[in-house]
Image 1 (cartoon, rainbow, N blue to C red):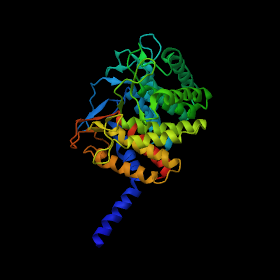
Image 2: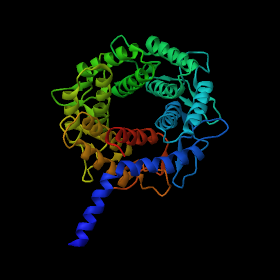
Image 3: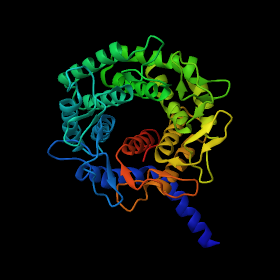
Image 4: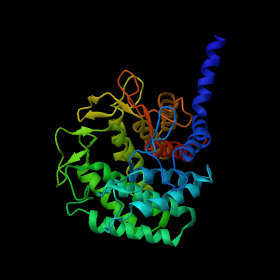
Length: 386
């Protein structure tokens, strides 16, 4: 009996301390790992992935969105005081991205993929990429309010407003435009507009965010079924059968709380519906699976890392709104994230995806997951404390 009480007490302590535990893991392991072997010191560029032993894949092509995400991670942790040296890493990474990815062909906007030597592999101007470029710039701008960077933000927004904006609402997939239309770029542009407003206090970003909130309520989110669509026709009518990614439903919960914060527009009803729907798509571990249908059935029983970080952020948003039990749910989700994804043999690494039997499906450590993991832990600390 005493032994059972001791075990229960230890488990309770672990749950209570999980935010501080994962913050420490980010500072002492992940940030140091990716600063040391996940980037090239000379150029300031970031690699796409490490192998299962933590060795960088130097030759792999480099997506501009991943460069931007890593810049965000180091700027954010410098801003928080977690990793002060991250400011210089972020600035050097931003310099590289501006030098190599911005208009290398003389056309406005940022290209899609670079080779490891910095040459252009894919000149597509992708809206999803530009959302993360704006997020990175806004986060670096908050460090020292550099006027030159503000000018870069304004130039980027000129491109987004004039070249990517769609007459049917929202933003095109890119230049050149393609089909189907997806909610995902709209979601990340909303995230970037919220961050840019926080950085600049420019009300134009509130207006842009408001336009995307309008698209969310009128087309992206089916309030009757409680599901967020993924794929759409040109006029934003849903493509059937509707594919549901529960991770995105959770991500919108957090984003709607951010939108409410900067505008005062209430979003509690939509957040509650999205979260309730997302929680239908869980497996025996309690983790979110990758895909379901509009009826609540699981379509893909695989489970990636990033949806687990987004359900953390969703519960954190609800905790910030005073929803009873949400803080405990956020900590429990962090425990699952740590147990199933962050216990990698490479300190500071993570597992990306498992099948329905719990077998790892990806034998590399992708840099793209860092943004998700870091943001979940940072938001948990901000609202719940360490």
